[in-house]
Image 1: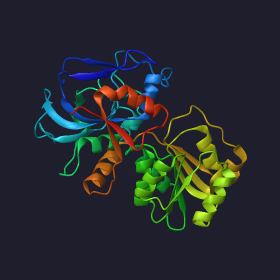
Image 2: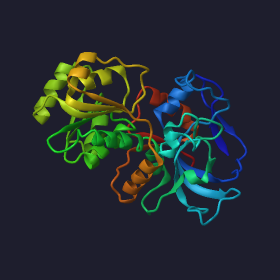
Image 3: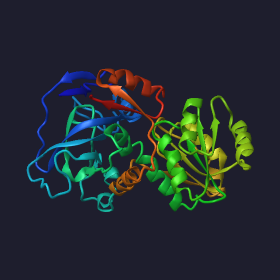
Length: 353
C-alpha cells in the first residue's frame, strides 16, 4: 500500500510502498477513502508538538479518517455493529478508559491516551487498523469518504465549542455570535452557529474574501474582512452591520494571539470566548476587563464520541455543507505547505483513487 510517512521534523514526508498491516485483536482494518489534512498535520511535521510529546519514527500522520471496513480482526463479531464493506468514520481519540475523563466520555482529553495519526498508522496510508469500538457507521447514499473524513476533527471540534457557548448562556435571539477564522474548522463553525445559536446573529471574521464567501454560503448573516484593520475599525463595521459594536459569543478557530486579543476587545459584558484553534503558542489577556466585565474563556479540544455521533447524525440528515479540496497522494507535501500558510479554502482531503 502507499503511505506518506514522517522520519523527522521539518522534513518532507516520504512517499513509500509498505505492507498492508494486519488488524490486531479487537481491531478492524479500514480502507481509507479520505483523510482530512488538518493544519495540525503541518504543525506535527514542523515540530510544534515536539516538546509536548515524544514520537517514534516513522510516523504516519492523518487523524481525520473515513473509509470502508476491509476486514475484521480476531474477536470482532459481525454482530457488533460493523461488517466488511461498511462506510465508517474513525473516532480518532483512544483513551486509557480508566481515568475520570474517559469515564465521562471525553477520551480526547485523556492524559494517557493515543490518537490516530500520531503514531505508526494514520490516514496518510491506504489501510489503517483501528479499534472496532472507535469506528462509527454512516448511512446514506449521498455521503462519501472525502466528505466525511473532515467531520472527525474539523467538523467535530467547533461543534463541541459551540455547545460550550450554549451552556454558557450567551447564545439566543438578540445576541451576536462570531466565528473568527473560516478555514477548515471555521467553515463548519458558521453552520453550527446557525444550527445551535437559537436565533443569534452570526458574523464571520476572516482575512480573505474567498473564505468569507464560504462563510456566507454556509449561513453567516454578515462577514467582515479583518486584514490590516484595527479593532476600532472592525468595531465600526460590526456596528454598521448588526446595530451593536460588541459580541456576546465568540468561537476562535485560529488560535493566534492577535485574533484572541481582538476577540476580547470586542466582547460584550458577560460574554464568552471559546478557543479551538492552535496557530500560536501563548496569549495575553488584560486582567481588569476580564474580571470587571465577567468574561468567560473556554478551551475546547477535539470532541467526544457522543459529539461525533451527533455530528454524524446531522450529516445523515443532510444539514451539513462540505467545502473540500481533493488532494492526490503524490501532492501531499505540496498540500501540507499550503496548509502552513493558510492557502486552502475549506478542508483539503487526501484521496487514493
